[in-house]
Image 1 (cartoon, helix red, strand yellow):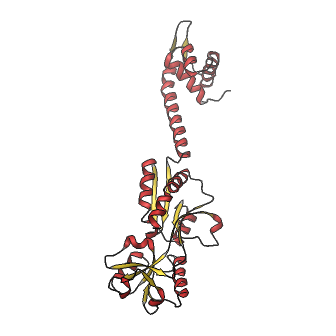
Image 2: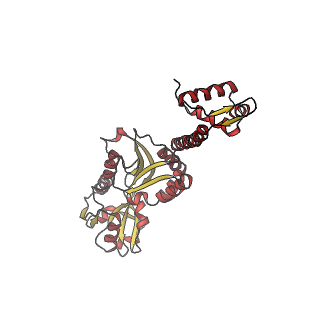
Image 3: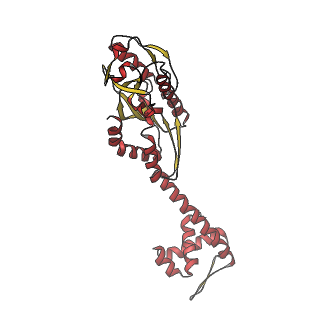
Length: 306
């Protein structure tokens, strides 16, 4: 016994629409004998007569009229399903979760999201502010597909793709009333006796380690008196006169009116902001976002590395 397929429905709907086998053959680009045989097979499977055919006319039977409505609905849904699958394959629908690392992503992420939403308005976009460790956990849980973060830990790096977005460097944040705020470049060794307020190591281990490293290259270990868990809090404490802070240059976007940000000597190592995603991820929405990111990258670097 033949099994009903979408082509059976298409051929039947074509004949029912035009009530003419020759016209249906022409419109469907299928030979008339093939259409006739397919409808006979369909009638045999349904055990009902759908069409009444004479030499001059084709008419729908009562069963054919009832079946036509259902066949048209099935074909409409099948077409919608095909279009939805094709759109998903192009990244036009679906879900995209993005984890981002505070002040390092804040200056660049809004423009990227706006550009993405203009092009892919039907993708459900979920944004989560997370430190690097939280992003790793979110990847493992499947909550995010892309992360804007610092360099990945060595024990996880092989599982991820990692693409540099821009390179940052450390600068010093001082109370505006500080004696060294008048200098364009601050020699770190002159801060050896100062209290330091530093973003906590748990939130950004590689950043914290570079703070310690550049101070040691300047000949001292920083006296850290406070380790806030938010970069905005770091800036508030500096503005309050409770210490100085080595911060990535990107944090200037959080600058308070009474905080001075100056270059340092010796220069710090480069501090990368990377886009990362699991190698095992297959998400066309992610691929589409990465294309927008790569197009924007030259402008991002001009903006952030000036």
